[in-house]
Length: 91
Image (tube, rainbow, N blue to C red; front, side, top):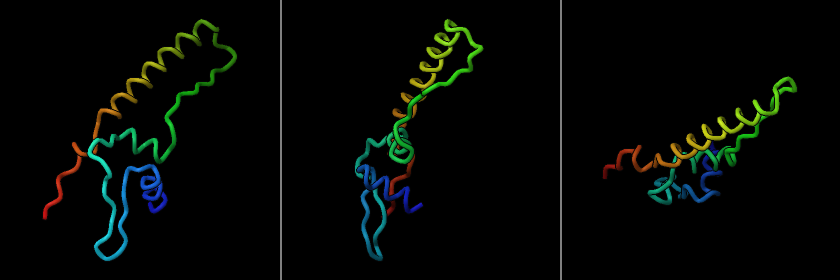
């Protein structure tokens, strides 16, 4: 868990404060789920490997379809902001 938190601090997603009243806070209100995933796991790419038995035309069609799916998923994850998901802190 500490490695994940450090990675999020390194990527400018969280800031950390030491001490008794310390903790972690989001740096901005516009941080997306995709930002956090990529900070932890690295850029989300879609490299595909197909077996030799698949014809070239089928590979191209399948690659195109899967690239569309991956792009749609990236856009969805990018549109979800953590500010929408967490409740405001009560004082």
